[in-house]
Amino acid sequence: MKNETTRRQFCKSALAATPLVMLSNASAQSQPTGLSKKLGIALVGLGYYSKDLLAPALQMTKNCYLAGIVSFPMDDQQYWIDKYNIPRKNIYAHTDFDAIADNPDIDIIYVVLPNSMHHEYTIRAAKAGKHVICEKPMALTVKECQEMIDACNDNHVRLSIGYRLHYEPYTQEVMRYGRDKVFGAIKYVHASAGYRNRSKKSHWKLQKAYGGGALMDMGVYCIQGARYTIQEEPVSVTAQQFTFDPERYDEVDEMVTMQFEFPGGAVANLTTTFAASTNTLYAAAEKKWFSMNPFSLYNGLTLRTQDGPVNLPDINQQAAQMDDVAWSIAKKLPMRVPGKEGLQDIKIVTAVKKAIKTGNKVEIL
Image (cartoon, rainbow, N blue to C red; front, side, top):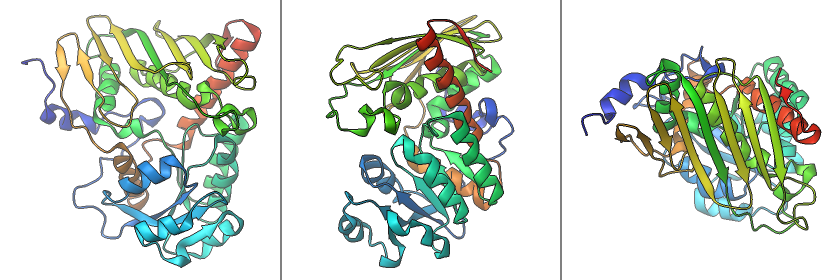
């Protein structure tokens, strides 16, 4: 179609597409030639995301590689040795994690643990002198997030939060729509993200102590979507919580709906759930609308404007993310997704929880 966004147009605009707290980020896309010396990444926590997504992605990266692992009692070290030929000296148990400080093969620690453990292992990694990628959501509280940022600053290491979509072409195009007001100012955003969670009640995502619940798991994608689409920070929120299976969801939320107001007059209506499969983002601007369906999955994202479909590359998001982080570290450039981005989302999540509890509109400071 004549209105279709081309790959060339995307490449010209992508380098400038940095949302909100990343507006000062000068980091370019990872260079085709890669770094002369790849940075070594150690994965901490060897569950599904590490095993099925991060480790395979690290076989595709140009600027970093899978150098080591940190395992817990339930993890199968031998699987990783056999599949990725990781040297024994680069394999740690959680009990000797701090010894990683003496290993020059490992430059970056990727914390891929239950939410409640992000704070501890990010700080320990920083004290070991290693740069950190911490999976989302950053931590359980604003205080924990700030302590993680401070620990990395105090130990002169870099911190990035694992928001992979910031490195993804379709998402970057949506950011450009909001930032450059391509269709005029954004007036309304709807986003929903959820899946049918059939985990046993013993799973950490259904336990409050571990930071479980739909809001912390999928809700941050909706919050992110509203923020990077509108390109403003919300100033207030009202919210509601719904439970369909009280026997399983007696500690954490099963569904949350949120209504945000933004300083420029835009509003956002967001839903996150463990009760149904949904993944969509729709934005109405002054002149035209655009939508993504799905908008936050690992692949197969789509983007459509009122003029028709937008065709951009479908990339490996995790590989692009880790390559860009390594590039930023090596070249001493600002992080595309620094710690303060994760901190901002937890400030918003905290306000959402207060709005649910009180039934009132809550200002977001």
